[in-house]
Length: 607
Ligand code: G6P
Image 1 (cartoon, protein in one colour):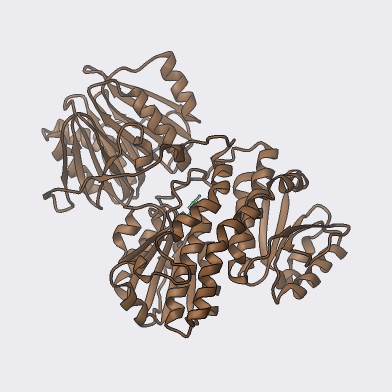
Image 2 (cartoon, rainbow, N blue to C red; image 1 turned 90 degrees about the horizontal axis):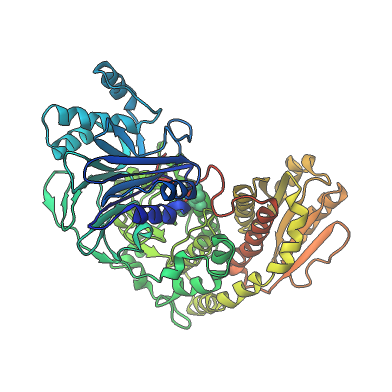
């Protein structure tokens, strides 16, 4: 999704802005631009495509100036062309960057056209530039013009504005889209997330919904949605800069797959002892809320939704509590019957997904409490939920989620233990799960070590146009996640089915051009799955099976890769690894843009 960077400094800002845009590339975008004020004029440069095209253009014709705003655009209104790229300007005097969607832009545009404004793009953003300009021309200060414009906008947005006649400042605001202020020494910044600014500061102010901010060289002034001047805390973002570097890896996605054995330790650290869960990890008051919980409702999107589907099996099997799971974009727009004492759980890597956030806001008052399982501290979901459990996976840069997913599962398994304690889970059973969690890093490492072998398997995929993924029980959502990974990054069409549904349709598709991938661990459903495999084989389908040691034998048309022996409740986490590797290698063989697949965004901050 779109990314914003802005800087007010006593030094040239173009390089800071371009570096910020590069660091936001992971969010997904299709054009980029920047505008810099040199004390006399605003100079703008925009390019369709990658930030490196913009950086090359800037190198050829440098933009000097110590005040600037920049943007990566993920097209919503209008094609990803240079004309539609941000910053947008009103005349020569004002430049604006915008993340989000202005729903009422059409009537606003019509009124502006009537007043004589000419539009040079198809975007909704350009109306904001002209509205501010119109108010300034009518005599308002930039601040008043900005505020009166924002009050007319419906939809979701984060904005950054600079004006030639009001030098030395950037005005910004957020409503529904994320925005942080980076606090420097004699310089200040804005950005869509802190990743964009880690090269210049580690001190951040996380803006609240409706906040309006003015940054100058030495001051950050914030007004809340009631226009009261407020103080927001400055938080130090503790990070290791290497998290944002690829290191020895060719792609961030591969680095993140390999990080999983380590990052799951961070998810568990300080939250479990040798054999017990430390329930206070869920925050103050969590134990009392878990005591009252009779039903769980999980909401999420994309990969996080698949984590929720797996958690449903755990929560119902292990904790014996009813659990419903739904994608946020459906949930938010329908009527609900919410039973009493429902714990409402959102799962999100970014904590900013627009649909998930809207679902939380819609239901908050009707539930016992809200808990978010999230990877980004200070994100909107974390701030707006009653409880939060951070997954601690560290920044995930590859658009296709990997380590965020497995750490979400670890967090959800810990939550399951907390709920199950109240529903008959014995100390011994709890100890068994916790000891299993301690083994997880080495089990994931064994999965990652299949890498070279899976790279060879992937050769059979790279030429295919379709693939089918099968699983049973909690391994069905794992198959769904495997199919999603494959389509996201290799653009091979993939579908997942519960293996038992094979005969009810998908079997008609099976022939030698349709590889079938199955996750077949060592559980009670294995024999049923074996029968499904024979059905595929009999139709000439080529099968790729990830199975427990010695459970299924390799034979013609059946390629088996043995997985380590895994306690049943950990199977969904460990069996995810080979499917991530398979998609990764298929995509590399196809030569796609693995870390930034076409049309996709990391953080979907618009509906
Ligand atoms: C986008 C990303 C996915 C992610 C989904 C939900 O589609 O590309 O990787 O799973 O959003 O994002 P969230 O941040 O809420 O987990």
